Picture 1 (spheres, rainbow, N blue to C red):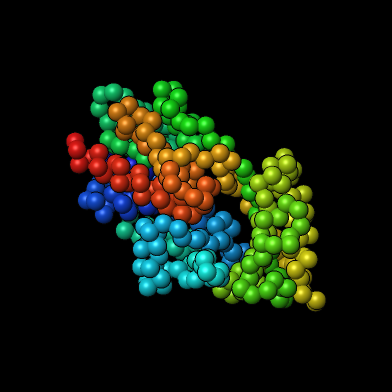
Picture 2 (spheres, rainbow, N blue to C red):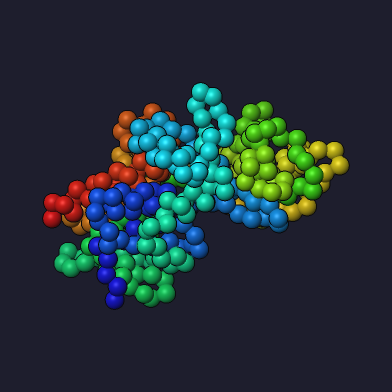
Length: 323
């Protein structure tokens, strides 16, 4: 049976940053366990036809000195670029946001396509992380970055009672290919003057990540919640009407896909960057819904996920040094 000092459940930004922080502090016997075929979580990029679209986070902003320092390094390495915004820049990744996640995780041991079914937290001996395929991995510490409604299903009753109550709003994203240009102005992002229920519209060709015209429409949480019982075709049909309003004369929609994000944004955030829920603090919960006490934005976003992961990694590294 495989044994690791630290297992991180979830390969989104929080999990990646927790791992990078631990490794920076000398804790290298770690493993990220990710249910999908790629790291990144909502730093997600999908191919549609000959095009490509970011279907989760489109960009990020910077308020904290920690992220600002890293962004300077990422800019120098070519991992990110300044997309738009003055005086507060919006940063994105030239290859799509998932490319940034992969670059950040390149030195981290990761087990992909591995869904965790339970974490057994006994008082004696290591934790036991069981996968849906029956495989078991022993660990002394576990960092869980999955959204709270998913995380709670993995825990014992005692640990479940310590999980803060966090509800999430969904988000539906329609992705469309055009056979001609769109009317979305450069730099390819619109978030004002939109129809009710629409959060933003993006032309990924003008954004610079797609060789063909690929347009995404991102719906607000309340709209997505009202319509989540509808079939995919019905949802996509309504969203496509928005996309079609941005067609240049003579252009047409040639392809369409829908992405349902079930846990897109926390409706209530937690004002601490991570929470200990296991016996003797051996299971830590973190993620974009766990905000630092001095967080001025007060909402889930790229930076809150980044800072939560860094804080969880710092906290666990200090604990391990004291053992």
